[in-house]
Length: 304
Image (cartoon, one colour):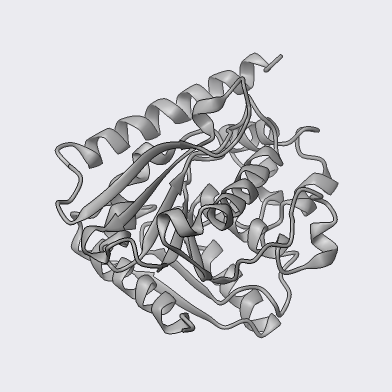
């Protein structure tokens, strides 16, 4: 049974973030140049089937030819979010010449880690199994994640490139797919400080982990602890005004230390600060610049 304190913490985050996302997305519609395939089941959890759905977005003029892929890993403090609140951001990525897979995953506190990582693995496997139907170029697959989604993506990228770390997650399988690059946006990577932070942060990490965040668990989900030289090339970004601004340089420094190709960007300025995950608002000029930069980084990695 889920403890009441975790239910309350999740409710508070879901209400606050949900109100903000509704305001951001008000009046937005599917762009005329995008074709979408919605609510595709990729998992078999009978209790939470709506958390195992995905959408596919493609440029209409691509005629279903094989396109490089971007997988979108949503954020939300590990307790909030789904594909629907990322659809307009994700469709703008598709407009840049990609087939985009936008998925929901099982959330805490109802479902504990590593369920979200297993769902992510299932999505990548689904891409392999459905590459011909939806025109996925499985030799050029990318992924973006922000905030908690950036954290989840950092763990997944480590799990598929670090065999020793992957031993912790036996559901991670070798597959005919190449993760060419990742976008880590306004992410949270170091975890230990959360238990020393404000009460809500402490509750969120306790709600996520089966043993409420033991030292061993926090090391397991430390987003920078398991990176090797084989980690995918990474676009790492944050912005002035992001409450997680310190985390971007932490990730970039580890990538530099390990010899991983990467690009680090900090948007906004002291005079004109932005905000956490600003890039998800397609109406914002700075978001257009950021998303162009990230997609151009991916395009530079594509192999024919």
